[in-house]
Image (cartoon, helix red, strand yellow):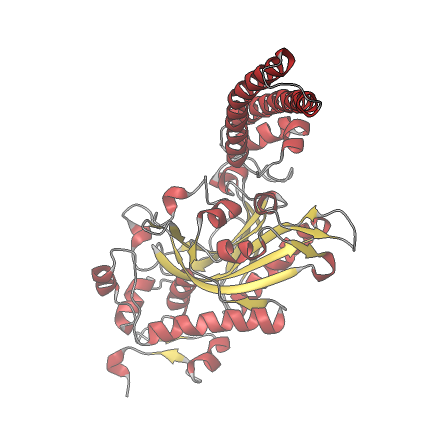
Length: 444
């Protein structure tokens, strides 16, 4: 259950309003309420009949123990009454199971209501929060684009450098499954190491190397099921899914656990390849590596006390921003509107970098607070102190960062007239001290 029956009964109006704001079906709240009422009514009937059958069985047993014959009228009548109740219980228990299944299904499909201060609407309502640009970069106007000089797009730069092998990647797997070569592969590895080193050494995250295959329970726990089934790759023979993001396996590490409150917050960082079936329609976004079926990402996951989760989201977002600042990439932070934030989030920030070649903003991170929505689905709780009643934790995650669009922005921002690409200083140690990438013909 994502919402919980008590919240369903107490907060139905807010759940309906949240569904409408997220452009989901608000009638699921009423479906869930009806199923809950039916479940409670049937549960009472079943309990009463079970108690009645138990009483009759005890009476028949007492008669037989006292020497009564099996064909004694009271014994026969008692057995007949018990059988009648048993037959009725079979029917009612089936109805109860159906009502419970209907309730669970409806609760899973009710979205997490957004925070009250979230702007209502679609992408047009996303609210810019702040921007950042390195020294010497054109200023970023509020709500607008910086007036950057002309630059080549990332796929053009990559072709000059010989670092993408998209055609051979497509030959191996299909379109939007890239292959990288030479400096391209080295640069991806450098970015992954930079991100993990920063999160672990500076930010106090514990590094996780999680499974890439996930089971149905894991997908349901974080909200991919029943919301995003069509976006995941299915390993049909064995009933697994390919992880769409490290959020799924890493958050599920603590499924069905009661955590020690003294250990909170628990924060993990993990690198994984990510797999998404929906890579977008043909067009400008599918050029190069902007929309892929397989891509690399470092993810931050945090388990927090409820009262600390809002501040934790701000902190998590800042960890992603620090990486962008060190990479010298101009960016903006958006507070996502209700219709553009996702099914399971209650609050979400997107970080977008400015790509001067394509002259547009590219999303490289989403940082989200799910409240207790995922924790309820996964039964992740904590005790504030020894002997205290377990409470649901709050779960959060954030991209820290997604590799392909960071790479695209680096190529466009660092592109030089001679075809080389200047690299930000933070990457030099990860590339053997190299300060730039050069086309193969210019290498000595």
